[in-house]
Image 1 (cartoon, rainbow, N blue to C red):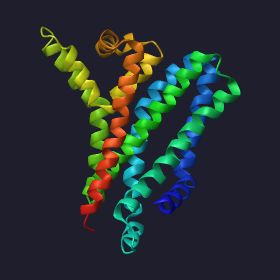
Image 2: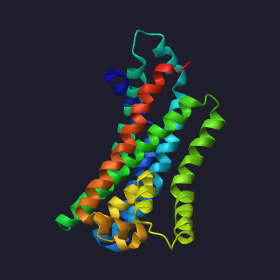
Image 3: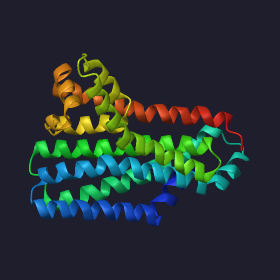
Image 4: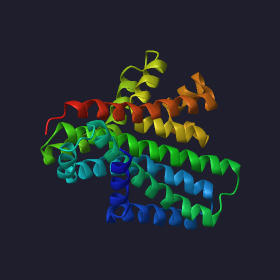
Length: 260
């Protein structure tokens, strides 16, 4: 698995897509720092970009890379190599390359500009963690979608629908349900609805750390009420990591029965 991971990593890190992804965050972070002239404000603006873009890029890269590597995977399956090692090596090689491009693109401008304090460093690390978790979670989900659908068009379409649902449609349905059932106690329901969406979880994690949970509305207020800021951050981080571990475990389980 280490050899496959190494091959996948260097194959992807040299691609123009990883370079473009790195340059995008490099230019975006530099522009926000230059225009706001304040690292804290730049982080708050960068949060919205990271929360939406990282899952989208993870979804697209996961589906594209799987379909483009399908012939290589079939070649490896003909060798005396465990299926789990092949699929997990491909996944982690891709995930590490994208996460490194993301982290490098954001970190370099802040290193040159300066963080400005311990609180800003913690906020910065939280955004890096949230972006990395979302990238790896949606990469794993898109891998599963591609494994289940040999038709490329169907696989791409389903992966984009999953991202669109979790990033946009889900929040609309969530808010609608809060308005419809506003006469009932909805604290537990709100917590459950947040936990089953990795994008909402990471948004909650970042906003609790930035101490602007009021901007998250009802969900932020519920997290502060039930858990407080520190415990809320730990709980949201724990469930966010489960969104990475769960799909990755499913990949290792599904690949055993995958018929090419």
